[in-house]
Image (cartoon, rainbow over all chains, first blue to last red; front, side):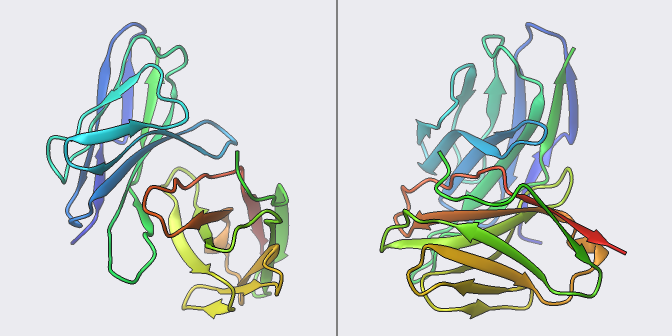
Length: 115
Length: 111
């Protein structure tokens, strides 16, 4: 099945440790996105990538880093510099279909808890 | 900042039509109206989008006012599985245009 996957679903880390969240898609989409969601809040954009080997900061990029070495993968690292990393993290991708709007497809999310 | 305004929450009886309003008074001529929904602890799911004409698909209908400053998402026969947060978003076709999610409307379907 084509889709977008994130692993793991739940992740626990100690304060001060870096942690990397996985995001993989087999939809052949060019663009990929990382969002953060806090309880009762909407999604906030962390980083996005429109093409391989290129990415841009979103609205809340501080304390995060990404890479886009392969089209199908867009891992997010939550560094120790992120002051409040506990949140629900969502990855999304969108294709460039001729004549169609770029709908974003979302993964199931990773819930990160920093102890 | 989100370009849309939605009620924080709404209730709807199971089997009835759920009508979710959205205000987007500053929408530009090249911006579309999108609707997504998010069931608890899952990723958002695309529902429908439109520019100026009313749209219908297997999930919902989208009614956009003639001046395009507001729209309504209609779930014709709501079920308990439609309980979710519904996000109304405006964005252009430009692939560099980010999708900005607001807080959405929390829809409760009542048995």
